Length: 267
Image 1: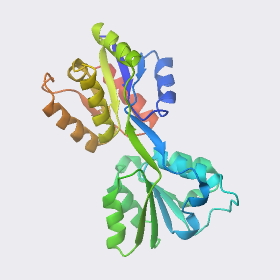
Image 2: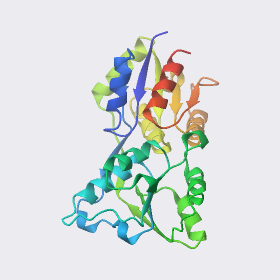
Image 3: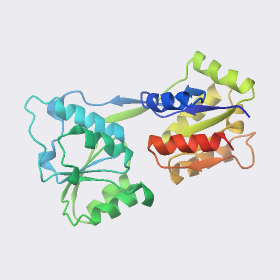
């Protein structure tokens, strides 16, 4: 059966994976559900690592935006050796490793084999035997409350810093036409979903444009059991769903997503 891939990660984050999928012969549509919008443009207002023992970046977007602003300051200084950095996932740490200013030994993230979420990061940080008394959590407007609470309960001072917002994107008429054309051709969608917010945004686009057939026919690749549970709740509320849609969970890095897409498309 013919299949095609739908990538819904935020705008600007799908292109490299899409190119790889197309090079392998897979028809691929970019239908981002969210737009990442920076909330700060003045590097002089950025909280600096000198004031913290640990900076936690909740996503790759948080890391990239922070490092861009940090590099644009008028009087850049070396990254302080006393400040460690952490991410919830290995993929999000890529920008930190590539920055060139942070000692790699001070970059912490969970082992992909052991799960990549707040609990896994908290457990990994406990094994560093470092004392993190001043913690900055760089995030969107919300998120990772549990992680901040663990540090606070341990006696740390925690600041949550919103560096970007995530806004739902409305698919264009052309995007909807491209999707409908493939559905009319009886092709099977393999849809990648990476957050509860993106699921909600995709759901709104599907309902707004009369594309409910997509929910019923798609197979799904998600990056965490939490995302899978959110998707299952959407299934429960949606009419016309298959009794047991295919939902596969994989790590959030492009290699794992690519392999899971290929495997799911061949089912």
